[in-house]
Image (tube, rainbow, N blue to C red; front, side, top):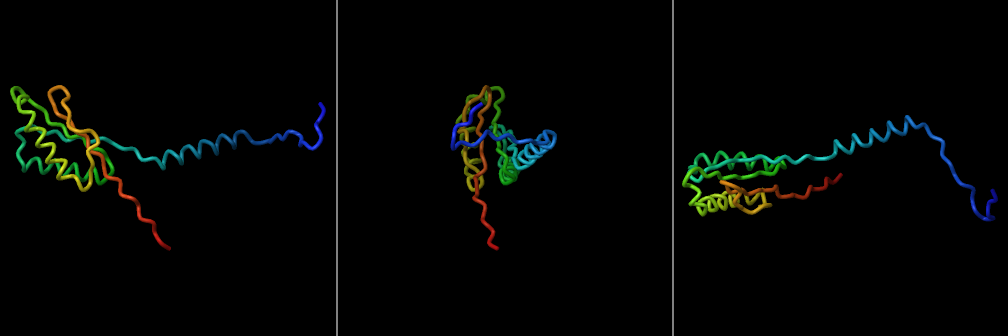
Length: 132
């Protein structure tokens, strides 16, 4: 094999393959630890849920959103309640307004079978850089 002038010969690296695989799996493990897994929690309401009990559910949703989880708000209808979808939409709008400081509406209210569903996502707050 002739080597052209002014060119370097091909380079080959001899390495310990076992050590290479170990370091590779270690990097993958560290990358997996750094990931954040977002859970989707759900609160279920009814059109006739009173304000007192709705407050409990909204408080739970606020806590989950502050932890970084998404929240599904579902209003289920039974029997003839399905005729009053506008009341459910009004309730969902109130929930979204109560949680507006910690959440944004990711999926607007929509009918899904015999229920109305809305998904709230946490607001991303930029992390403050620590000065040393």
